Length: 142
Image (cartoon, rainbow, N blue to C red):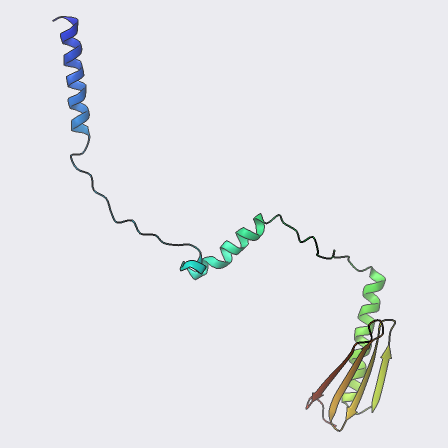
């Protein structure tokens, strides 16, 4: 056999093998869109996962946000003592041991009174002048 015939025979043989290796017909299933995001009908349990991923990738910062400064140990102690003193004052007035009590700090003033079984707390912000009145009834037995 000559070389042309061998080459032609080889190409027919390769084409036949490739044609037999491929399936005769193709099948396909139906494509169904399933959203992940619960906002668009996805699994509601994916919400926290997606939010966590988004927050971990968020590199934007609010230019108007105030910076957080940690308190010194002295400032934390003062804040804790003020909280404790105000709590004790409210307890004493509520228990009937005092009719009225007050607490003053550099920034605010607190006045606690018992008005006929109703505990009234008045907080005055000395810097802005804002006044907040809190009335609570039924917490203490007069």
